[in-house]
Amino acid sequence: MSEEYSKVLELMEEAKEIFKIQGPFAGEYKARRIAFVGDTHGAVDVTQYVFNEIFDKVDLLVFLGDYVDRYPPSGVENLMIILEKFLQNKDKVVILRGNHESPITNLYYGFYEEVALKFGDEKVYEKFKDFFSYIPYVAIVNNYFCVHGGLPGKDNGGEMKLGIHSVDEIKSLPYPDINPDDPIAFQLLWNDPREGLDDFGFLPNIRGEGTFYFGEKIVKEFLDSTGYSGIIRGHEAVDGFRIDINGKVITVFSSRYHGQSAGVLLMDEGKIKRVYLYQDGSVKAFEGL
Image (cartoon, rainbow, N blue to C red; front, side, top):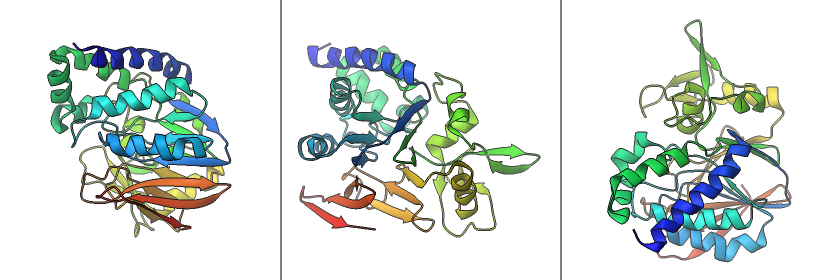
């Protein structure tokens, strides 16, 4: 095992100790200037751009999950860069878990094989699997509910109802949770918003068993009960961004290797700027929503 790759194992152990203190809920943050980074999936160039060009210009940087799997096979390096910065700036970097920080996806989307190849031992993956289980699911940032997937539902007499109404319910989730197996935690990582579901609570999602779509009715109920301003999430391979539910749900996708632009969402005193990184590496910013 090279010194480079042994370093990421050390970083994970250090970061895990911080995550143990945070638990499933990373905390509540307020800042003037914030950058939100969606799924990078090993896009080291995007992560480096964020740290080189954006990091010093913001007060808080929030990663919304999915650091590994898919292409390019640089999940180890991507994770290493993020964890190094996190450990150097614990109060400025927030790391949330995505659905690809899990053996459910790693065994099929490339990260398991990447680890086996780079470390020369497939058993090393167990260390990554353990580390992923400690990454928090949710943060509240400037009154926005930040999560990788979406709002979870809970079966109530055969009907799916909103599954959470406060961060206290997040804090009480089973932890650590490898897959995760808890249905609320699982849906926080896997569920998706959809327009046109006004008369429904949750509908089955094409992603598979235990995953759901949620619409305006659920978003309104959640925001009304919590007082939050909206939801910022990742999870879907959109062209940088997608705005749903009357602007209450913002999706950010930050890998430029999946047939679309990478997006980085900036918030400056409540005002939103969308930054697009194109396939050729050029950057263009669009003001406002």
